[in-house]
Amino acid sequence: MKYTTTFKKAVLRKVLPPEKRSVHSVSKEMGVGEITIHRWISQIKDGTLNLEQDEENPSGQRNMTEKLNLLLEYQKIPQEENGEWLRKNGLHEEHLAIFQQEIKTLMANKSDDKDKEIKELKKQLAKKDKELKRKEAALAELAAIMTLKKKLGWKDDDSAEEV
Image (cartoon, rainbow, N blue to C red; front, side, top):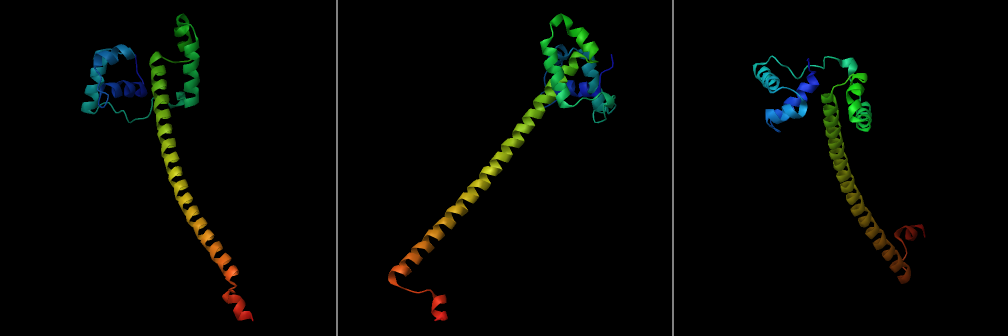
């Protein structure tokens, strides 16, 4: 069976650092022979396997919405119909595992971006609140000065020049 580059990446990501899981456990989880995984590791080391190259079938790529919809649809079907559903959609079970991992990664990244944005907005809000309080204090001081001037009967410098 020929595996896609995306699938190989997903398998090797689990075996190589930072995850560094055992080849045996990844083999059972992903349904790939241990020998095949060891061969891929050897090919990476000797440079014959390039995981940076584009997918073999770029026209078959799906966007995240399609992948999520496929995962949700797959979960709804009875187990005995899984094989037929996979063939009908041109997928293997390993594709579903990859889709799930991609969606988890995307959601984690979006969450991190949102957290950074919220933190920055809070910082800007605090800065603006501080500036507003300073201006309110200055305005209150000016109002107090104007009130005192009226009570004492002082005239503004501008009005003295006009007279």
